[in-house]
Image (cartoon, rainbow, N blue to C red; front, side, top):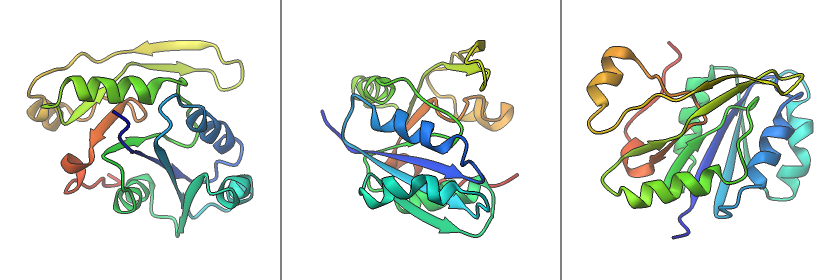
Length: 172
């Protein structure tokens, strides 16, 4: 299946990293994506770094005054049209087949509202992996998330749009 995936990337003063994030998204093996960048009031060259992608129609770009990443993600959700939603922070990158794998898992488990993967944390200068995390969870995890809080790093989960349409992030 080739479902549309909306990828939401909030950005605030990320001129040094935003191109790497966008390039990792454009390199995805799952090609049916829309990349939505929410510039949360950047005062650096974030917009200029994105200009080639905006002009080429490769990303949808929205600028708002600074309200925090939660509000930026909500703006992205409001402007998403994909069957699935994926969040990638503007200083992160993902493997070239990450979206394909997540969509495949979602299709294998149609009852699941969210699927997720492990995360690697790397030194931004050397690229050295210093932490590999995986948070095993399955079944009805909603209560656990309410009690324990969200234990899934941003950039590891894919959510069905139908499931997230009434959920909003906050900045707390």
